[in-house]
Structure formats: C-alpha cells, structure tokens
Amino acid sequence: MNFADDDCDGVVDEGYSVIAYTSDDCTGAGGSCPAGYHSRGSFKIDSVACGGGHSGEDYSGYIMRSGWFTLCSPTDDVILAKGHDDCTGSGGGCPGGYSSRASFKVDTVACGGGASGAAYDGQTLNSGWMHLCSRTTRESIVLGSDDCTGGGGGCPGGTSDHGTWKPDVTACNPSQPSAVTTDGYSLNSGWVRYCVSN
Image 1 (tube, one colour):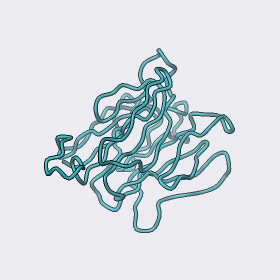
Image 2: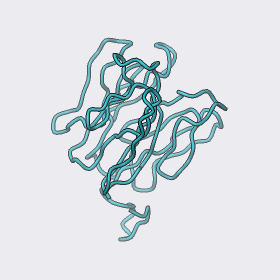
Image 3: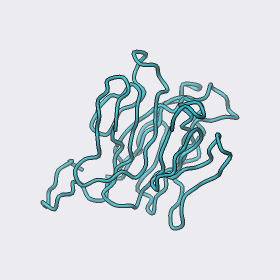
Image 4: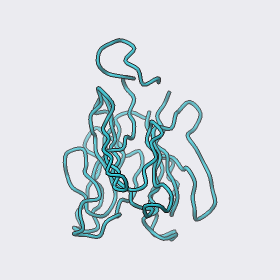
C-alpha cells in the first residue's frame, strides 16, 4: 500500500480501506476520503476533551482531538453497520453476506444531543454500538492498549494500521465494555486499531 494511483485509473490502493477524519470539532477543520474512496459509515469520537490529549489518528497520521471519523473504501466489501442503539432500543447488525469483524461503542453524545454515528446506509445512531462488517477477512479491529489493564497490542504481522481511536465511552467496567475486538477481546477503556492486510 502506497496511497498512489499506480495504474492511473483514479483509485489509489484498490481493495484497501482506511479510517479518515471528516471534521475536527476542536479546529473546525474538515477532511474527506482519499480520491477514489467512498464513505462506508462514520462515527464520532469526543472521548477526550479538547486540549486533554488526542482521541484518534487517521490513516495519514492526522491527530484528531474530537470530531468525526469515516470508514473509506473503494469497494463495498467493508462497511460500518448500526448495531444496538441505546436511545431507541432498536437492534441492528451486519446485512446479509457480511460478517461482523468487531464492534465498538459510540455513545459520545447524550440521547437527543446529536448523532454519534451514521451507518453505511444512512441510519443515524444516537448512542450505542457499531459493527465493522466485511465480506472478507482482510479487515480487523484489534487492541491498541487497554487503560483498564495496562495491556498493549498492535496490528498483527502482515497487516498495517489504517486508523486508531479511543472508544473509552464507559468507565472501566468489565460488564460494560466499550469495544469487542476481532478476536473477541473485550476492551473496557483504551485504544483500538483498524488493521488491514498488506
């Protein structure tokens, strides 16, 4: 992966997907998906107050304090789907043909205080969970570091980090994790990485 259009077809790094920043609430800056990529769902990460450290880093190394991230892909092989929404009690999940690779909690805003996520099909999530859904096994969400246990992690061999963020939307509480990684690890408070096969 080199973020270049090697075959001059208007799409860079075919088959890969990235987490890109969309807007940064602390700076007012806007971002977008790379050329040839399309939004496959988005989520808000204001888990750290502005000035209190950063809450995420996109595929290009852009540091975000508080704002929106978008899953960008040149294909629809990978999407973000709405899961359970704590504000409405409605359920969700991956559509037919997709498997959930991991999930994470996005209740960064109070119910009624604005959306905290938007699924690939435009469903608005107010407070709850999103699923990383894929038709391949190329993508995964893995542990970066767990503030509750001190455990660390990183992308496994043969994969690259295409975005990181902090879903510490709940206090350290084993019964209320803030993310479940691809290998089933329950993260209570800390960082996760979006990893894609090289």
